[in-house]
Length: 239
Image (cartoon, rainbow, N blue to C red):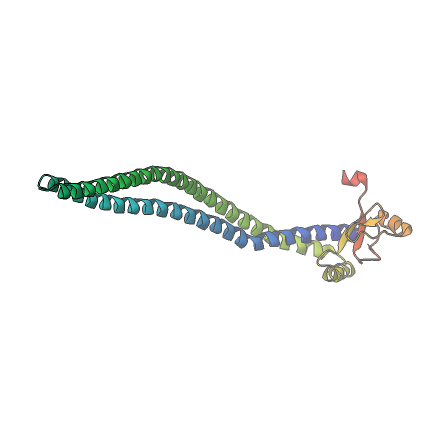
């Protein structure tokens, strides 16, 4: 293989890897933000569950207060029942007692329902607290992994700069100039493989004579369509 072509292939592979590393680093803030959003959402759900339990307890205290008032009034009416002198007064007090007892039953039923609801809410809260703790632990692990990945990518980028300089120093000025010119025109992809008579990037069919010349890998030959520098990898070489 032509030395300049071999170096250009290595240079393109390094450029491709470098671009992937840069994109990965650029995506890290978004990944961290997604983790934060997940935690905030979970925290809000947990807070809502706590609020529902707190509201339940507040309603129960309010009903118990109303129950206490009615029970006090009922006790008062029962005491009055012993002091009435006429049948009319007796019936009136009995009616008040019946109304009070009905209210007591209603309040007690309401308290029972709130107690059952509180049990369910307490169980749900414990489960959500456990899930939230697990989510926080997982988020911490993910952040640590991302920090390690960012450090590794930074080291790879630093090494890529050194490797690129080494390859460029071995290239002829004309080959380097051609590579950089095509890379500017083609979004950084200046070198492509020719396979089955096609350019694997633009997928335009190559003239048979041109493809045969490319198969020899002894010259810098460009795609007639996209102008990328083409090379050929035989099945043996690929293996």
